[in-house]
Image (cartoon, rainbow, N blue to C red; front, top):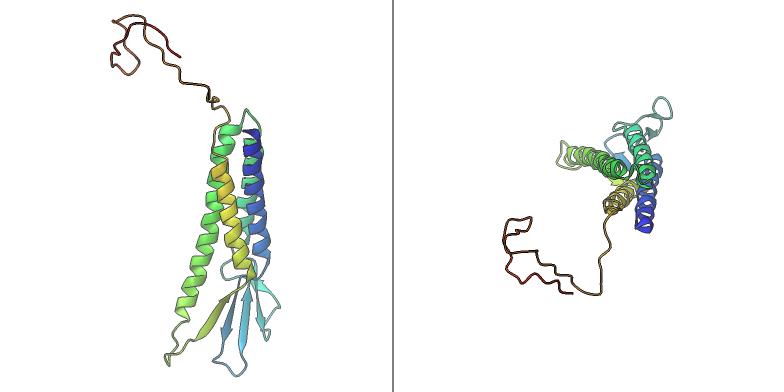
Length: 196
């Protein structure tokens, strides 16, 4: 059981780390072709760069999801530490599931915003695309990291205190007399013997 919790913790932390690493990489590129010179805007979860440069070399990203991703990843890591201790395992399990869900939610929202921008650029004034939006390697890392983190959080939900199941047979116990009723309120007829 402890081994399963460790695997779940490793998966959750690994997924959170992959998401943070993916946020540092370029996630999508927008190519505008309606100008004299083709304008290429490359975006990560933190900054936006344009070629040819216009203004400062790096600007804050249009969909700046860097800090929310980092905060969710840190909460996932803290929750994993709580799941590994017996006294705080319950709180840790709930917290790791919520933090991994929030991490996946931020990634999903980021991708939804990029898809919205892509649909806005799909038709220009002459019926041709005003710009092309291409996904880059950072997007794949964001999605795969979110999936790994959620899988680890789901795996961490198994309780550590579950009783082991006896595999050598079924134990059937009857009640002391005919007046006794089991906890569910249904009388069980029997002769008062215990069978194994």
